[in-house]
Structures are given as C-alpha cells and as structure tokens.
Length: 196
Image 1 (cartoon, rainbow, N blue to C red):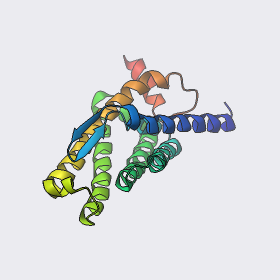
Image 2 (tube, rainbow, N blue to C red; image 1 turned 30 degrees about the horizontal axis):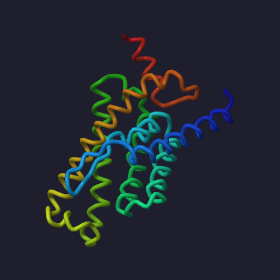
Image 3 (cartoon, helix red, strand yellow; image 1 turned 120 degrees about the vertical axis):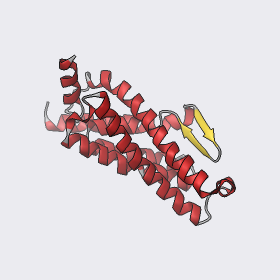
Image 4 (tube, helix red, strand yellow; image 1 turned 90 degrees about the vertical axis):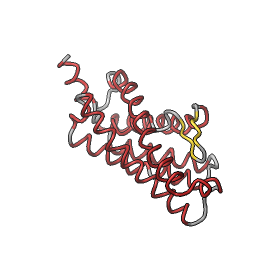
C-alpha cells in the first residue's frame, strides 16, 4: 500500500473514532457517584486510536475534546477530555517503541494501569485547578477535596480507565485483523496468535 493511501485510511479511521468518541457520552450508560459521573466506554475510541499510531491517538483525543466543547459541556469537562492527549500520546509512543506491551495478559494489564495512572493524574490536575479556583459545583465542596477530587476523580478515573482499556482490547483483537494499514499493536497480536 502506498504511503498516501495509508495516510488517507488513517485519517478516515481517526475521524470515525472521533465521531464514536463524541457520540458515546450522549448514549452510553453513566455511573453517577455524586458529584462525579463516569460514562462507560467513553475512552474506548482513544485506546483504539493509540493502538494504531501516535498521530491517530493525538487526533482522536483532540477531536473528542473539541466535540465536548461544541456540544456545550462545562469547560472543566472539556479540559478533562483535552488532558486525554497526554495518556493517549504516551501510550501510543510507548507501544510504538516497545510493541510487546500487549503480548500477554500481564503486560497488557501493567500497560493499561500505567495509562490509567497518567490519565488520573491529568484529570485530577484539571479538577484541582478548578476546585481551588472555586469554579466547581457546590457538591464538590460539600464532600471535600479528598473525597470529591482525589477519590472520586482520581481513583474513579483509574478504575474507569482500566474498564475502558479492557473493552478496547476486546474490540481491538478482531478489528486489528481487518485494518489494512500498519498499526503499532498489530505485530504483537500476530505473534500472540502464533504462540497459541
């Protein structure tokens, strides 16, 4: 396949993942733990994008952030979504450099946990800035910083990220067999299939 075809297919896949990433929060089930809420599968398109390549990961993380902005979500939600660029690019670059990170269940779990920790630190940082700037809803202050920000946003994001990472891996394995462009995680899955 020519380089221009590969770029075009990557761009189309990124656009589709952006669209899915914007639509999921509108329709997917939400888990509400006042004052925070978590939308099941909302990070799956970003994880799939990082399995493909760093440019696709960055494009999808940015695209979904702009989707939240244009949909009228509160600015703290938009900035939390924008912070996904950090874990998406980090994960994509790590996977590109060390492609065996998804070769076993143990390595996949550690990789997902690393991304979840980065994800949580970024989201806690955004919420902390708004919290101490007195720009959060009142129920955040009622429950206090430790409960509202560190536990609900921080620990909640780690759990939410790991669940979405697992869903993304489940979706990615069959999907990677039909994608016709070079991807960061495909070689690992081929090797994994050969071992079985």
